[in-house]
Image (cartoon, rainbow, N blue to C red; front, side, top):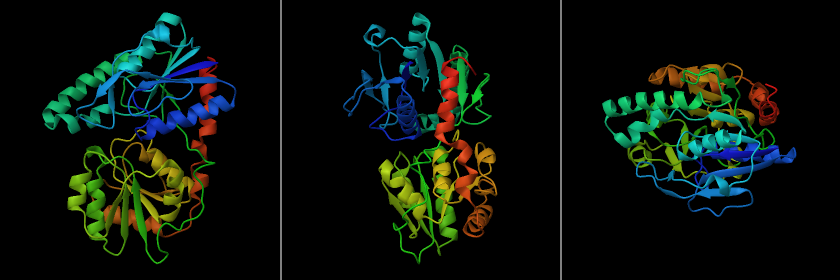
Length: 344
C-alpha cells in the first residue's frame, strides 16, 4: 500500500509524535509498504518520500510551525491517508482522502486544549478557547473512517480504536548504565517543559528529598522559570539524541512524572522497557499504564504521596520490561495494517 502520513509536527522538532511517525514509517516500509510524510517545512532537509508544506513561525511555541497549504496534485496517489494532527496539514489530508476516496485514519496524539494556556496566558480565555477547540476537533474526527488513540479515554465524543503508539523494544532495552556515578541515587524525567507537564511538582519533590539527585531532560517554554526555581540537587539537560535515551533511562534509578496532559506517556513506557520503574501521578493515562508491576502512582499535588511512590520504585524487584511488552510497536503496526486493509 501507499500510505500518506499528514502531520503538523515533524523534524527538526523533537516530540513523541515525530518519533512515533518515524517508528511506524520504518516498520511499515520494512513490511513492503511505501510511506510518505507531508509536514510543515522548517530547518530540515526533506528526504525521499517527504513533502514539506510552506509554513510560518508559531508565535506561541517556536518548536512548532504553522503550516499553510500545498497543492494536492503535487502529492502521490495514496491508498491510505493517515493524519496525525488537526491543523492545516491534517485538514489537507482529510481533503485529499475525500477527493481521492482513500481510506482515512486519524491518530489522536495530543489534547491541544491543555496547551492553550501557554500562549493565551489568561486561564478564562484558555478555557473558552479549549471548549471551542474540542467542539471543532469532535467534528473533525467524525469525518474519518477510523480514529485511534493510545488509551481507552481520549476526551473526545467519538468512537475510537485503542491503539498504543508503541515502544521500540529493540531500541529501548536494559544496557550500559554508566551515565551517573554508582554511589548516587538518580531520579529522572524526560519530556517537554510546558505547563501541564507540571515539572514544578518534581522540583517540590527534589526539595523534600535532598538525598537524591534529579536530572530533568527536555526543553520548552517553562525551562527558564523552572531552572530559576530548582534546588541544588536538580540538573537540567537539553533533549538527548534518540540514540542516547536508552542509556539515560537505564542509568537512572526511577523515572518520575506529574504530567496531567499525556495521552500515553511514551517516555514512561520506554523507561520501563529499560528496566526502570516509574512513579506517575494517579491520573489518565497512567491509571491504565502504570501499576505495581512497573512502578507506583501518587496523588497529584501531594508531595508526601509522590515521595512514597518514588521510594516504592526504589525498593522491590520488578520486571518492568515484561510489564510493558504489550505496548510493543510491532504489535501496533500489526493492527495498523489491519486497519488500513479495512479488516479491523
